[in-house]
Length: 364
Image (tube, rainbow, N blue to C red; front, side, top):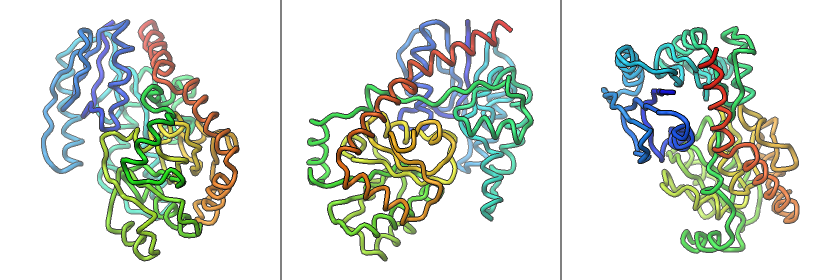
């Protein structure tokens, strides 16, 4: 079977790395064509990359034009099956929903946040493609609920398949833990809280910083990967927590930070299904996170982490202190986090489920 997908970029250091993980599994059974603006090659004879030009520096114009160009290009192609995110190409056979723009727009309205052009236009394209698609893959229970609620899609048209994680790359390693703590100047006795995300406001970093401030223990440190901005640095300065908070920005080898950490703290407002939480769990980190799309699929409350109903810094601080004081509990949660990641979320498991949907849709 000849399968094609459309994605704006296909790079290992971006969220689109998921496709690079899946391609080798797909290519075992099918010929795969990827239409994209830029990519990291997978060096597989059954995977073909095709250039879609990306214009404009303006993000919103770039998004809209990419969708238009990819749709025009695809009209001159012939494939057995098209599989794509619904805002990247018009009328894919299978729409892959990692994020619901309508759900996010409704959440922003509820919180009194202003909508931007993408919030207004993306859900129109999203709704059109979801209704036209032959089948839909939703990456979390929450995304599935939003598709049904906001677009009236029947449940039998949706298959729940989670995002995955490279369990060989993201795994506990005592030797590497010692090595990377030395590399980054972190004491072996310190307790490291890890936060990963670029959109610091949406993912709730300020609540983690405030929770850290409540805990009067200089051995507890916070490492922030991904985002870095003046607002959150100012908050750290105001609370005089400069010695306990480390902003490292974008990093290439993010697995080094997971392996040296003790727990992952993520009081996010909205997600599709965060890759960061999966990487944390696979690395054996207990996850302390708010109830959001994906976290409710991953976290068994009290077993491999804690699901929070509030972002109150006092509540977050109490969960952190509980894990800091109880080393045995932290180790138990670490083992369980790793077990669940390997059993349910490894890319081999996820790829098999997606391939089953491909076969089903092709035969219908």
